Length: 238
View 1: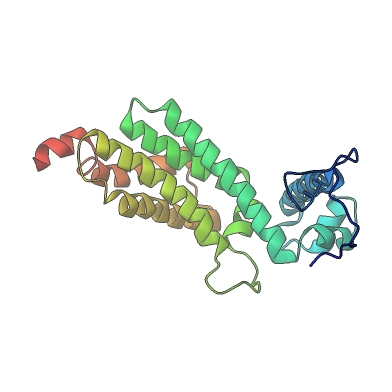
View 2: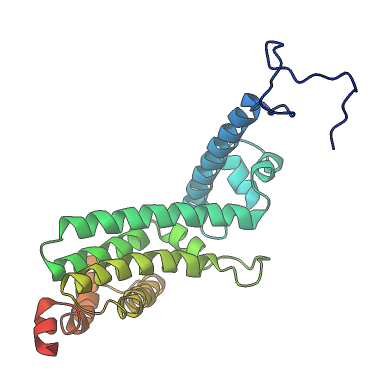
């Protein structure tokens, strides 16, 4: 409740009486807006520093190492992130954005060849593992953190990718005037298969080139997709 004098008058910025309303409109605090932008930019800078620190020190990187990489103190890091979990989630968001962008680019380049589109998508995922193994380990095998029940950043990351693949499959099924309902199942099944194989590849480091692994996974996936998603499959089903 506002405190008003009995002699208070509603006036605008120039002293004119505002007859349109009995209450004054709050002015937007531009300083607050500038600080919001500063905080967003600083969070991005600290997230980028965290990724560099992960690459240098491994997936078990500590906050002291993150602060050192950012040339600041842990106190400053915690000023912009509520806790280590908050920073972890920011790294997950970064990985998701990069990976989905790479998947979109790879699949767009191979859009005229469905099987090559599949190979390109799988290869883009494996490319992250090969190029940034410690960042991948950090995201996929995070330290035990206190998180709200039901909140699982790894599942969220895989869900983003699975939803993207499911949408591609769904679009193709609709183009064929077919039921798109199975797209969610197939999209997430593909991501689960590639993730499991990628984890094993990263852990065991077998003498297997990334391109060869992508081809093997594509062969397995295509044997199913070619019988369910392609126009040939539609002809067989009719």
